[in-house]
Image (cartoon, rainbow, N blue to C red; front, side, top):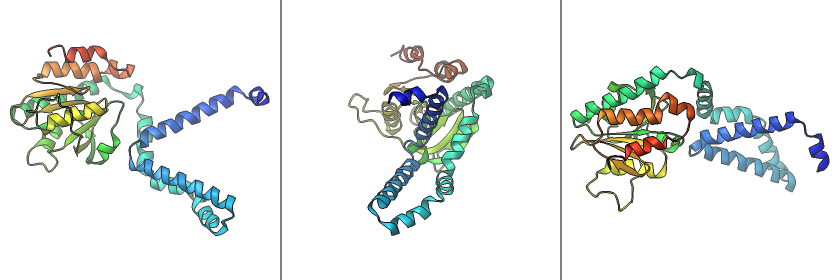
Length: 268
């Protein structure tokens, strides 16, 4: 043991840390997705492969050996979506972010919410943060488009087949629409709240997401965070909160802004 540490170079430590970081990032990307189940299946195949060799099951070992000899190609085919997502994420460095674009995304979102409020169009916008909610995104209709006023309004138009679900937004893009969210089971939630408001509270109880709700009946705009709902939001209050949470300065820090939390509930 002493000899091991004596022969350990700083390059070895650095090498181990890089591999551990890459494995961690892969697990973050596939967490909660179907790919994670596939990965568990491949891990089981490796266990059976080792057991067959140890137990002398030569036919099974021969079959699995042929299967695993093409494991690189198999991984590329099975995980092509996750690999593409990881490469796209790797290309999104903080140096490539445009503060003007981030400002535009926020303004487009506010404009859409005000428009839908005036027209009494019900809407449910989920802003993903650290928890990307891959299972919820995969359950909806994948869009992966830039946030625009027209896009959001058209999605929640009553004539749209996906207007009943939620829109999931991350990094200034609409990831998916028509997504179904878990409803809150809390007895503290006002019984007069509809399904949209209960879904907004429910998803913020389980994740760190921020949700904007536009009431179809009253046109009232509400904002949910941390399992709590604040009603009667106007354009200025939405702009203030979204900039504090998702603006360039906050994104660069990558930390939770408790001041915005207090600002949100100051009127409660």
